[in-house]
Amino acid sequence: RMLQALALRDDESVLEVGTGSGFIAACLSHLARVVVSVDCHHDFLDEAKTRLADHGRTNIELCHGDVMRGWQPELAHDVVVVTGSVPVIPEIFRGWVNPGGRLFVITGESPAMQAMLLTRTGVTDWQQESLFETDLVRLENSEPAAGFEF
Image 1 (cartoon, rainbow, N blue to C red):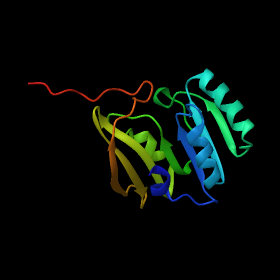
Image 2: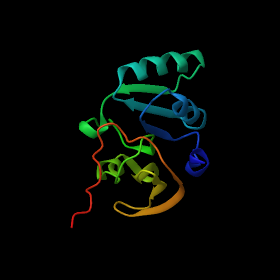
Image 3: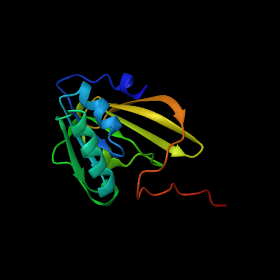
């Protein structure tokens, strides 16, 4: 459903946050011009590099970094895909999306999170669509939402 909603074109660049096994990066690389995938775990990146090479995926750049602790992409991208959940969407993610681009992110608290597709329609304007409900592991080092206090 995520790939369908993104409607990737073969001239687009994608930033994937959370490489994991490399499976999503491989899927994205079949549909886009280039994929930059970042993960904060060296072992995930090493394993993904081997898997991707074994499958001939040459348009993927793997990077080590923690997006929640200061890692920044060199350029904005047409599409940003976050493969771990966040309690609220960090503003910094929006800055990584080119005008007209899309951001896929899962937000909220377990057990009822929302898969969201945000489309940048202007410098500060966004169109937002809820795609489906899900429950996904939190992105490493993302802060939990502030709880209710009475």
